[in-house]
Structures are given as C-alpha cells and as structure tokens.
Image (cartoon, rainbow, N blue to C red; front, side):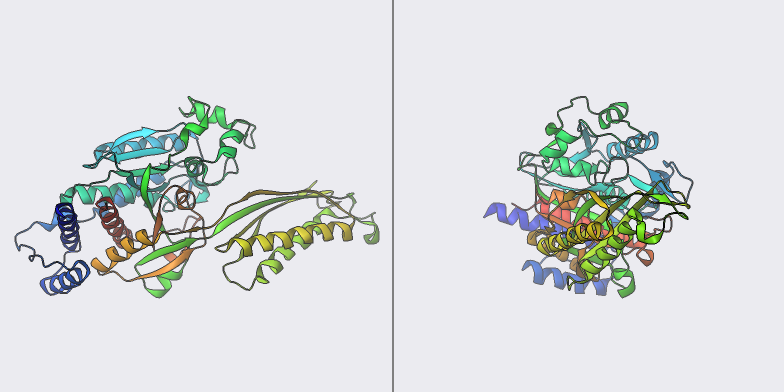
Length: 471
C-alpha cells in the first residue's frame, strides 16, 4: 500500500511539473487540475504562485540550434542533408550526439554496429528500463528532421524531466539507432533489427558489401566498430526494456491539414521489398522489327503497372506499392533492353493482405515473362516483415500525457516504417507523431516548427515519466 501511495505521489509530481511547462494561467490551471484529479482520483494542492516555472520549459532555441548544427554534418550542401552509414560525416554526427548525451549527464555505451545508448539510471536500476530514440542517418539530399527529432528531442525530454526535479524509478535510455535508412547496404533499420535478434542479419553482415565493394565489416571497423565480429552480441535480451516510445515527424500531411498537435500511433505498416530481373534478347532499335523483339524493358514496364493494379485491388487504402528502382541494360537510346531490374516496396498494416498482393505480383511477373518471351531471371523477396501494433499501456500513457498538456491529438497508423517496428519485438511499443510542413519528408523542404517539436518533447517526457514509475 505504501508503494502504491509513493507511485501516486510521483504521478502527481510529474503532472504538476508539466502544467508548469505549459506556462498555464490560473483559469487554465483550475481546468487542468480538475482534469488531472478526475484522471487520478486524488485531490492535490494548487501550484504556488512564486514557483519558478522557467526550469520546466523545453529549450526550443537550443534544440533548434542542435538540429541545425547536426544538419551541417552532411555530404551534400544545405539545405539538403546526406548522411550515410559510417561515412566521415556520420562519424562526426555520432560524436556530436554522444557529447550532448554526456552534457545531459547520461552514461554512454555503444555496441558493435554503433547503436548508441545514453542512460539516466533510475532508483531501481535492476528493473527493465524505459527507452526512447530514433536515427540520424539521412538518405541523399533529404531533410534535417527525419529521425533527428526523435534523438535530439529525446535528449531534451530527459533535460526537461531533470529540470523538473523528477527522479525515475526505472532507468531511462535514449537510443540512437544505426542505419535506419537502407541507403548504403540495402538493409533498413539495421541497428534495431539486430537489437531485436535477427540471426540471419547477424550472419549476412559478415559477407555484405556496398556498391563500391566495401564490406560492412571494413566500413564498421573504419568507423570504430565491429571490434567483435559476432554481431549476435548486439541482441537485446527480453528483459532489457519495459517499454519503447519513439518521437517522430509524421512524414505525411494529416496532422497539419487537420490542425492537430499530436498523433498517437496505433500500428506501423510493415514493408516487404522485392528484387526482380528480366532477361531478353536485346538488339538494334532500328533493325529489329517489333514482332521479333523480346524486350526486357517492356516486361519491366508492364510489371510496374501490374504492381499498381494489384495494390489497388486489395480494397484498402492501407495497401501501397512502389517501384522505386527500374534499371535497363545496356541503357542506350538505340538499343533494345536485354536486361531489366526492378525493386519494389509493398506495405500494409495487414500482413495477409500485403502478402496476397506480393503473390499477385509474382504471378504477373511469371505471366509477363512467358507472354513476352523473356526470362524471369530472379524474383527475390529481400524482406517481408510483419506489421507492429502499439501496446495499449503505452497508448494510454501517451494519450494521458496529451490530455494533461491540453493538446489536441488523434490516433493514427504509421505508413512509413521506423525502428519502432523492430523494437516492438522486444518491448511494448508506442510512437508520437508531430506535424510536418505539407507532409514533406526525405527532401530538403522537410520542416517541423519549434512549437510542434516542443509539444512532442513534452508529450514524450511525460510519457517516459509515467512509464518509468510503473511497477
């Protein structure tokens, strides 16, 4: 019973602290106090008038400065950002993150692929910790907010809690995940996949090379990692974390269009990636008559249209398909393509529905090759990940935080995948979305306002605090 009273008091301390974060007026204070009393069933005293609330605010100016400074570690000119796994700028950016973690008083460790962990130790450090974080790698010529808000924002959320006087029961971890983007080695969410225990990936990385024939091992070692080549050492055990929460820009226009401050993610659509190769006869573009052609390029074009047809036939707007890569060989205007290569991305929050679309795409690839007299050289499913559902306890914590902070919110799904997709295999998971300008992402115009970022940081901080004091 005594423990229950302590937990209740901690809940109330957190709520009071975050009321002060918002700079609440007396009238607003009474409304929110009533809401918290209804939620908690506990009557607590009003805030003292002389209490200094400035220590509980998000330092938006400094946070934006950090975002801007991190964007300078780039292989492309501003305003674009290009930060590829284990590049010189990636290593510099990692050093920047570790420095910020250190300044926030977090203890830092790194694993053999470069996942970075900053821990604020709780009063009961043997309990599974609560974790948050995201990534900082960036595809070529992208923006400076994707992933970054979830790393720098998480560090600032810790700072907000520390300034508020909060003391965690469970330890709080900020994680910077290695290589969420598949840019260099074609493997999305590389760091979080390994943390989730992917044996096949741990094995494959020993033979993986990039398009410059640089092995993953060589690149990792050059960046200061892979001291132990047994990447199974990266795997988390099942008691590492009691929860994981990721703050992220929406990467879509819904929140901005509807004027909503916060998105509470209930599910993450799972991607499947497919590589397909057709082989034809080729020939001279003028001398080979149309009836005599076996055009690998047209086979690829027809299959690309078939992808669109099959995802639309699913009957759900949540089923999507994209032909992101289509390459022709030899690539000359006066030569009939003798080879074609496609890479296809299909996604859905319903795994069976997505897999049915993949089956239809395969059936079309076979029928097209027969009808056009070309050879289907390869139909390879590179990955076929299951979707992830947010845990109800984490959803409730996020929802309570937005209500206490008097922010508008809606429940929604994430059609983009994130490291949360794989962390859900190791801990109850949730995601917090904030609006971004016109839904832009993966382009230089990507933008989230300081106010929206601050709202996300506050919701994250209160959610982490609630989860930290849970039994």
